Image (tube, rainbow over all chains, first blue to last red; front, side):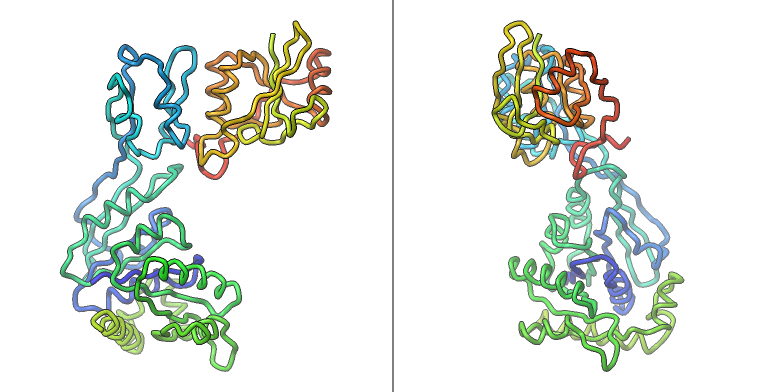
Length: 279
Length: 124
């Protein structure tokens, strides 16, 4: 089963929750899909067993075959092509690898070439297989890397997907195959606003979801909790605003591996989620 | 020789548009006939690569001089390949800038930016 952990903004605790959930299971896969700033490895410290490059297909042109008809230029929605001084210019960074120009060209003047945009590392950390994507600096979209991560995940195991923040294409790609979505939310108005955004997203994708309220302080108002109650959203658990937890996390420790009370918290959370999925 | 300027409306007294790739119109001024034509910018609402498409329009128009506030790297690559020289616009209308160009008061645009929204920037 695949459990996606997401939030509308950064810093709510996606990686904290993902890493600790993965380590609470007897055996699990942790998939870091936050490919622009992957940080799960800082906690899991896996022994790397495999590293692969991720490539995208881009066109290159044979100017002897090209008749300068401009069909490809008119077609390209991203304007990655231009015809200047009787030569076709191709802007690789702008190309979204749709392959349209290659298919469309009446002269079959295009060839497919590949370009590396990032990498995926696989490694072992105790009971966890850690799969981490990393997008190269300056690249436009991490979607091809996330697709590649998804193709590497074993089907039969518990997979925890650490999503990128927000609700854009990279998040949609990360939750596409998820069986359940955990929405991590902060007890602030800003946090609630961002929770509403990801809640809309998971509703749009018809994904079963529950909210994990992080950084909760007893006796203080929690607008994210109010949002859940008002919208009848399942609250999976509350994580306290806890100095020890913060301290362990800031030093790169995995809390469930350090203290039994956190082990219990995340084991219960995992059990809750599994029940939700099997319902 | 033809001079081209991104403008906010189809009027020689219109202000120069702060955006190059997403300007609504271009004014094409012919120094021989002293006449101005206006071109709709088909790139204005592009999903991405607006600068490249707008630059293609400029090259196709036969202009040799562009007067603009700013210009991205990809557009500059197309303009350079097309032999278009880029000058930095100064506050005022399209006509004011043509006058300044004729008086050789405009400087060449050197601060080409890497592109916006991570689309089309060359960060390497």
